Length: 114
Image (cartoon, rainbow, N blue to C red; front, side, top):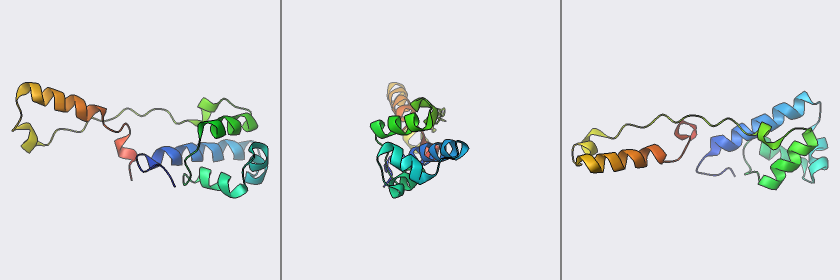
């Protein structure tokens, strides 16, 4: 199962793994054999259904002949969520600033949470 906090991240990593694997002409079974996984595990990683462990990411990158960072999606700049007006109206200026800072640091890639 993907991480409930950011399932889109695992989907994007899996899509990148699948894309590179296909461009190298390597079947899922070949990649699985090279990294010591089952073909089903590779399929689940590629679909974003399985949280990939860092050592597995490195092993997959090595098997594909690339750097691990090439399998990671670029960090997407977050769009700050505006503070709800009813909350904003109840807060003092310094509280607004603190809450605004807190909201801007929440969760990273909010639009990817589906």
